[in-house]
Length: 147
Image (cartoon, rainbow, N blue to C red):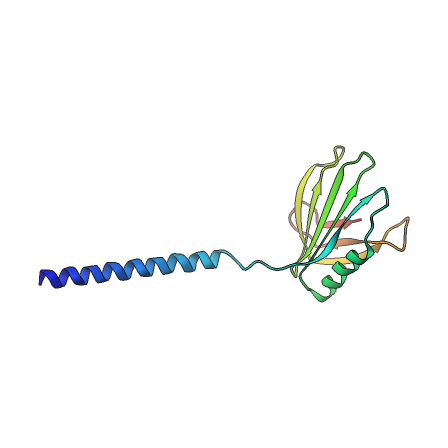
């Protein structure tokens, strides 16, 4: 009887270990969502008006309209030479990350999730466009412009 109890106890312990191993593995799988592949629309660096990439901007705009996953980054350099980078991701939500390194502005990185995006013409160069984002949360602003 003692031997049967020992075998039975061993089987119960082994079963519990397998079950715990499976439970912790499934919990780990639930915690890590699959990474969304974003189509790279391109990166531009605009220094004193030079470096504008119309094709990259058109790519992110079309992705927004179709709600296709995509990413575009534009970096604008201030007169003093400080970069302000804007990364727009369509996931299908519109997520904008601003990395402001302007020594005369509010330095830091902020991320905004926005409900809507529209094209806006640039004032001095109407053939060029930027983006206006509205209904934003996070990052402290409800509206945001990407030049």
